[in-house]
Image 1: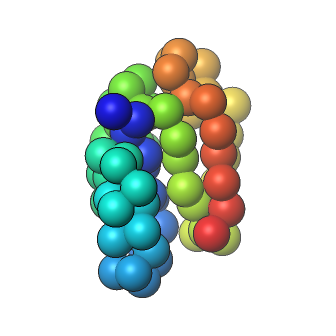
Image 2 (image 1 turned 90 degrees about the vertical axis):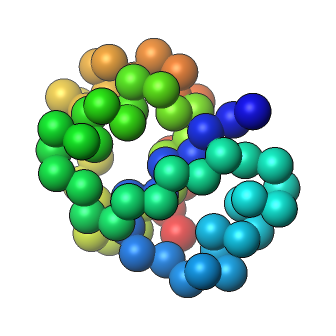
Length: 71
């Protein structure tokens, strides 16, 4: 099962759509940098909005990350 991190606030309907499609959703709006980096080690997809800045340091250990989407 693919793991999707949603790190900014989105509507419950958005989470439900991902879960109904069979994804394991980790919903943690506004995580600390340490928590975010820990999540990024295991996720396959990352959903952000304008509140999250994607930094190179976040991506260096994101070995399973396949896609970043902006909601």
